[in-house]
Structure formats: C-alpha cells, structure tokens
Image 1 (cartoon, chains in turn green, orange):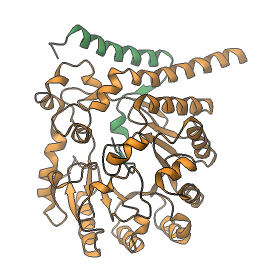
Image 2 (image 1 turned 90 degrees about the horizontal axis):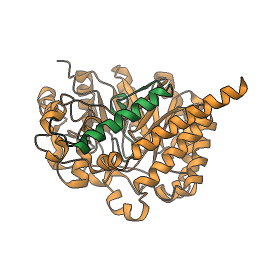
Image 3 (image 1 turned 90 degrees about the vertical axis):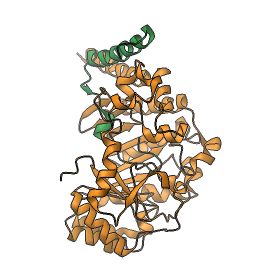
Image 4 (image 1 turned 120 degrees about the horizontal axis):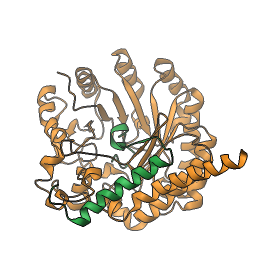
Length: 46
Length: 369
C-alpha cells in the first residue's frame, strides 16, 4: 500500500485512533471478530 | 491429511420447514431434492469422520426431518462431534422427551434458536404465533441444561421498543449468547427487502441501544453485533485486522446441501458455486475447496484495484466474497456493505458506546468512593 493517498492514510490513522481510544479507557480488546465465531444465522453468516 | 482449511461441516439435512420466513436463504436452493436420504447421511458421516471436524446441523428446520433422532443416534454411536443444531424453535415443545434423550447422549450440543423481534415483529417476519412457541422452546432447552444462543436478524418491524423487549427476554430467561445481524441479500430477502429492510444507520442505532442496555446490566450474556463487536469467553473482539498475507475468506465451514452438493461457501448455493458432491472422493473435494480459502488478500487486491490503496484495507480485508457476489454479482469486487460500514464511520459509533459506558462506570466508582 505504498501509493496510498493522504485521504487513505488518514483512514488508517482514524481506525488506529479508535483502537487506541478503546485501550485508553481500559477495555481489554482484540481485533478478529471473524476468527472467533462464524456460525450461521438463518439468513447470514458473515 | 489435516484438512486445515475446514473448521466445521454445516449439514443442511432438509430444505423442508414449518415456517416461511421473509428472509430465509433456502429459496436460493433450487434443487428438486428436499432432504438427504438415510444412505446419503451414512456417506455424510463418513466424510465428517474422515475430516474429523465438528458437525453443525441445520435445515430447513432439522426438527421437521422425520429421521432426526435415528440420525443423531448414528452420529453419537460414531463419536462424531455434533457441535450444534440450528432451529426456529417452534416444534421444540412437542419434542421434550426427544430433547432429553439428546441431552442424555451429549450435553455439549449447542442450540441456536432464531428470534427476529418481540412477539408481533417476530411473527410478522416468521408467521403468527411463532414467537411464543420459539421462546418457550428455547427456554425448555435451557431448562433441560443445553447452552442456547439466540440469533436475530434485524428488520424494520423491530423498532427500538421491540428490541429492548427482546433484550429483556433474553436476559431474564438466561440465554447464553445473543447474536444480532443484518440480512444477507439472498433467498426470500431479495424480494422481501423492499418491505422489511432496515437501513444500515438504523441497524446501528439498534446495535448501540442493545450495547447500552447490555453494559447497564453488567454484560449479562455473550454478545455478537454483526462482525463489528463480539464479547465471547470474557473477551471483547472489535472489527477485524488483516495483512496482505491473511486469507481473504476466514470462514472455513464446508456446507453440504439437501441434494448432496457441496459449495465453497456456506452462504452461496447455486450450480456455479458447487465444488462437488458427497459421493466424490474427500481429498478431491478438499483440493477443490482449498483454493478459495488459501487465496490471500495480497493476491485478491491485484484484481480489485479500488481496494488496493484504500486505508481501510487492513480492517475490511476486501470483505466477504459472498457479499461481493450477492450485492455486485462478482467474486472479484469490493464488499459494498463493509465499504459503507467504514466510510460512513458507523463502526466508530460502537466504539464510542463502549467508551461512554466505561466512563460512566468510572464516574459511578468515584461517586461511591
């Protein structure tokens, strides 16, 4: 992703800031929702 | 062979069901065959045994399948890991003794019961009287001793008050986990969405409402809000994080359909997605399945230029392939739903609700001190 525009770089920074804010309030949080559970509902599994 | 790209087998025993839900994916399934035969199921169990993976059983509704008890007994005698059974819950009250016999054989079978709203809104979606039967059936499972997860698909008849009422039922009846999701563009939903669709912003209002109630009540059960937030095993999981080496499809369920066909994705039924049949050699099936699960995000973005330089790529991972196919008609395309989730900033609203709840907790503790 070497050719990212400033707008795309700021998108990545924005997600990192959200993750950092969560950590700051003391929530022990991991990423990876898809890995931890992927059972279907009657309509969807994603 | 370890068959590492298969985590579980999802068996659609039958397409037959006692309900006709507005969002059911089974309408995508167009074969003449309604159910697997006893001989077919012998072969299915051979496959599950060779793969040595957990077995999840769904339908239609499995409790409509007349040979369910003998099939389950066969699974237990073969020591297969029957991991879960998915049901609309309506027939459970009539099956009390059967359910007790299942529990006597295997206490670890997990039940997923679908509730798409509270009373009227659930019934509008699934049929009159279905809510009471389903919630009482789910409660019976809980009383017998099973773990029970509730699956909810949000739709526009489930208003905020309805969602709160359903939340209270799930909490008060002691169910173990609640998964709340938005519908896939498949089956009956393709036609029904004009009538029942809840837009993404409104869906996230409901997610945040649930989250606020859940924190207020000190997190009374496990929770899954779409793929944005999960609380499982005492741990929070928030969004996904990928690298170019991550597989583009983390979902490793091998679906078997009522005609014995096997597709590479549990959300896709159709000739173009079929990789084989239960009577094919297991290694040959696996060799056809594996490439879909091995393909990396780095390989994928070569064919999806709009994702290549996107700043959200490390968090959406090009998204779900079934969504790309069902929404855009193409395997090699973006997942428009995930694009919207990130570009609209909706993912941040969930984080903000978590942060607000933690700040409230801190303020309360300070007041007490």
